[in-house]
Length: 229
Image 1: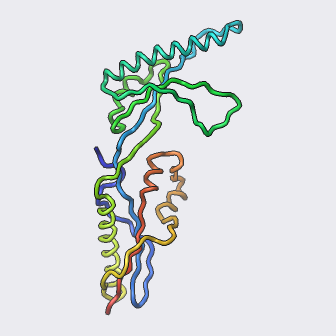
Image 2: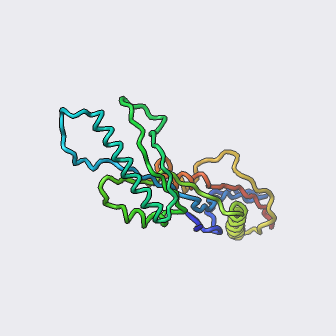
Image 3: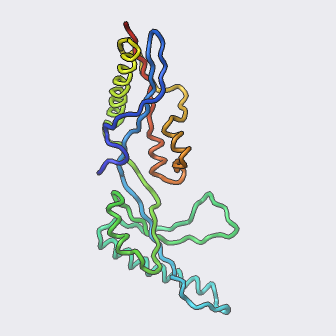
């Protein structure tokens, strides 16, 4: 599977420092890389909307006919998708259980296709694009963390912060001593990266599952080094 968002050993971004006569303390931020585990795509069929309107029609019967027609069309679509090699599940979309509405919405039959990544879905989407009655969208993402990713990110953070600390100590006319401590911030506050995103209107974590996952994988560490003459 391919890596997503950041390479495993991407350089960390260091922000924030405290310097005294005895030590130099730097806070560094980075993000644990992820890769796609799977993506779930949902397809449904609805009448294209070209049926003639009849105010005297038995709408219960009409709805039943529409449901039967949707079932037949989904059956054809399911067979077609399986022929493409996709993993397909026929299920029911009952809507969002936490949403309240004035009118009860009937359960809708859907097809759910599970693929390793978005690239695997592109031929299917291209084949179905523009087909009357067919609607589709991504409904779920699942990500995996590569083995050893946490360790690799911590090593990258340490490499970055040591180089920065050595440069700061040199500019101050001091030498960098040994590492005294390394720990996560006691109270995690919004970093500069998050602040810039918010100011630029790019914080879409509540709308984008991928962005929400990215935000959840951010790491912060505080490194304290001794200063010597």
